[in-house]
Length: 299
Image 1 (spheres, rainbow, N blue to C red):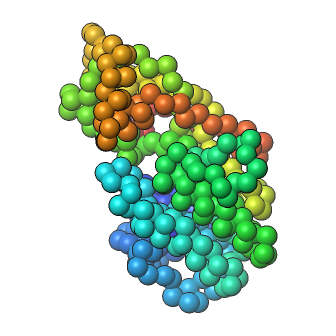
Image 2 (tube, rainbow, N blue to C red):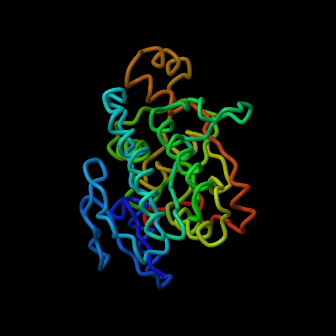
């Protein structure tokens, strides 16, 4: 079997390429920088370029992970980039894949694209972030394409992903704790879903093998974690003592009233983000790793 993985040099993409190689798949990586562990690489920046016509002839599956995320500095200014990379590039790649005979297109979306289930017209729903909104619109484009072509389309929404070479807010939190600059948080009893990158890669392959055309699969490890648990797990793996005192919770509430980046960071610390992975569990998926059991190696 021959596959293309976009975003092949990234946190998840590089692990997926390694896994696919172990499954005896012939993998072509697509990224801006290349993946030195792959024999076949295509350099492509989807913001300014597209794959050459004919690139996907003979390809069985496209795993599309490339996209744009983790820009909280000025999201309004970045809107064009979000639209270009998360919506337009995804749609263009899927159309090209369909025309060139690709059998299966696997899109790695995000739980940020999840929408309320009590609204009927999904196209009018706005998610909580620009990132989530553009991922959701990309999903809708793909679902429409699924109805119009013979190409099988699978959509995967990972929850918060952690593991070696982690990125984003978890990396910032880990580094701040390691350097001693992270504040002693009050006990925060929120609920968050997470998944280790290696479990996610296993889930992606399982959905590729057993998933149904046009379906959306959310991937978590089946457990819920509070920000306090995440904080204490990082302290344990970094061999840092837990603080002897904690900030009062009302202090976070006061800080959350300050507009801008600080408010965004406080909101991320206290908000609930838990999801059900029952659909993929019905395919036989069970996570092997839990965040609370992490050590330095698994991070």
